[in-house]
Amino acid sequence: MNFPLGFTSNTTSSYATPTKEFACLFSVLAGILICKIVYEVTGVVSLSLFKGYAKLSSLQKLEWNNRGFSTFHAFFVAVASIYILFLSDLFKDTSQDDPITYRTSTLSNTALGISLGYFLSDLAMILWNFPALGGMEYVLHHGLSMFSIIQSIVSGQAQFYILMVLFTEATTPSVNLRWYLDVAGQKKSKLYTCNGIALFLGWLGARILWFVFFFYHMFNHFDQVQKIYPLGFYSMLTVPPVLAMMNVFWFWKITKGMIKTLTKARHSV
Image (cartoon, rainbow, N blue to C red; front, side, top):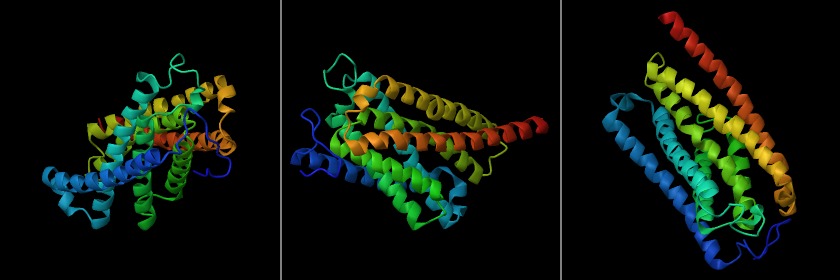
């Protein structure tokens, strides 16, 4: 297989065999198919359990179902990331002699492939309905995520750090629940307030403090990070900081929204 500019193969994590390429393609297609299935199931289940769903506009139903597979992906990738990063032996310091940036497995490739399928599906919907499902910040976020995942799958490198970043999707269910409650007219409910607090704490932990740990880990293993092929190495130095700045910006907006909601709740008592 010919690697893109800046890519190099290594003996421990080469992704150049036809079998692995097929497995990668299969996992991406599986991710797209899963999104389609969950999208349709979300509509059917919502119609049965939520009376207001039938009264939503076509665009609201579109976003409602879209957030259904977004939530599913968030749970999937958060659980997969935690298992691969900390529970499996793949990235344990004593498990292999290879640099942590060169380690890969069938499970990690599959998880990344399914996640790539999700980002492709979601980005396609965002662009097709632009800007109804999200503005340029979502396009930038998905574009950077796909760029990083593709590099990691093709090269078999830096998967530890890609999975760390993907874990931050764990905050997505709270974001989606906030939108669901808003559309359902439940902005004054206790659940909306509690979800706002959970979103604030979850974002602080998963997208702010987690990124601090991410950069701390990179600093402590920089000798191994430097062994990544050139394009991947420079991507590691640029993409995570951009995502971190976006997370800080959104955290500022979440904090303002939580303060506003708590203030209204206190005045209504």
